[in-house]
Amino acid sequence: MTALSDTRFAVVDTETTGLSTDDDVVLQLGVVVVRHDGKVEHEFVTYLRRRTWGFGHVGAFHVHGITRRQLRRGMKPTEALEMLNVMIGDCIFVAHNAKFDLGFLRADSARLGVPLKVNGPLCTLLLSRKLDPQRTMSHKLRDVAARYGKSTDRPHDALADAQLTAAVLPNLLAAHNITTREDLAAHFGV
Image 1 (cartoon, rainbow, N blue to C red):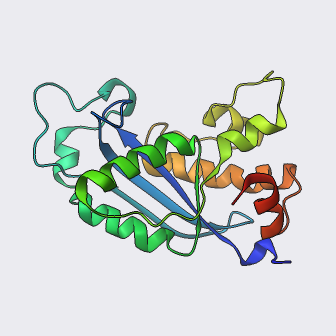
Image 2: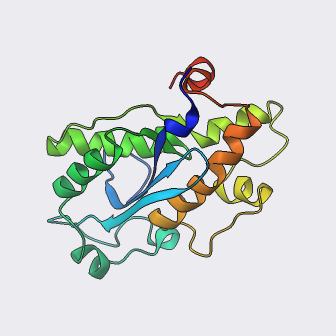
């Protein structure tokens, strides 16, 4: 048995221009590398600087509040994906609604020719839903976090949401009695 204490998790969140992986792109990337107990080892956040944006606002501005000025200070998307690969290399990839975040990262990866090296994913949204099979509660990140006494004052900021997800991860693992890597593999395929 491999103790969970020997496992590192890369908790990732993205902010995007919209909801379509075909037409929309990642604007901001946040990563928090943590241990199973929530101890933070490293944090990283960047805006992704694109060459062109086309007409209009930068996607769902009313949701994320990201401006073109902020994006101009960001990293090139290829550099951000390369940095992400370094950070997640020996970690389990975690996100709240991992299908969404990983879908966008994979789409950008394919468009830019930077292959992603993902171990996982582990989805905290699915972890939360599995504890509530009748779906009597909300499983939005802020609501899951509130159940464990956690909150953020910067919702829809990639780093803040990654930090919040990292803060609830130990609670969700404990609620599922996950204490070893084998438990994780048996219950969640990771």
